[in-house]
Length: 398
Image 1: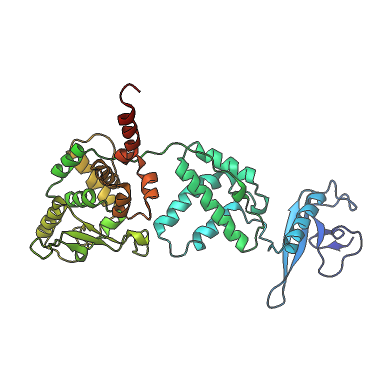
Image 2: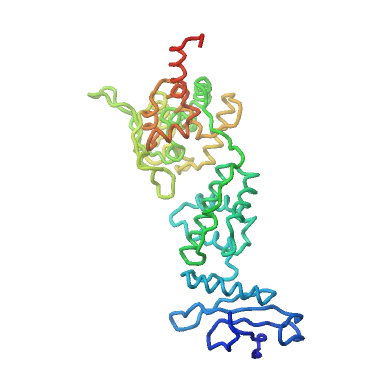
């Protein structure tokens, strides 16, 4: 053993031989007088260890440190660091916690994503980090993750819990790519069910007619008419340009119907949600008339169709505020959101007997499975067709 300025040196890991220059070692760092030079059992201070993790490009040695109240605990941590090096894992800083990994992913692991997307991931990660954020990444277990998710599930919807779990897995996966950890504990945890979210609903035909009447002659009235008449997404409606509106020509040969062309949205890259979302949609007469009246009132033939007073695009808050005022004016009870106009479109198409495959094409879905899963409550005739056929076969007596 050899005295040093920062503490009493001890032997190397796993051997009592004198360590060579640069080898891993442990030592006791005093915070007071040494009363036990051989074992330091009652000395004030803490055991510390150091491991060599290679060299920097300029030849400087890279060291990682561990500390614990006992020598045995320091030895265990140094052996784990050595095992990680052997397995190809890069020793992370001792304070590299789950929260540090999550913050690194939010800051650098979502290139090109909109601030809204980053904020959404941060929000769903926060309840998880409140439970395990201070846990060292290398000490994290799947049981820790499941406990944090179970706690989150007590206050959040199933969708939010699933989103938070996915965000955590991706954050740790980024740490894996930097060789800070070899195992992603979140990958082995199950996602619990959370609280039931508010199910989407659709307006009835009578409510839809009342809403169109109450909002007639207003900017949000044209927005509602187009959304109800075409099933356009809210993100697509807010990005709709006058150049994409064709009022048609009934006198042409053959007659050209009124239509809108969906080529963009308000997403970060201005692109639509999927390639299938780029589509041309015919407009019913009431939607085309509403747009014609809007254009006549605002004297604009270029730029956003649904614009602010200075000609800029409406944001989501603008649309929600005006839509809820229109719902109140129409005397429709309950809480409604603009996206439920799209659900109403699907419901009205389904009530009219339009096949689900055609509804999927109009909605811009990749296939009808998405339509059936997301809008299953609105596809009433499609779902009831089998039961009605059997009732006809077996009769009322059955």
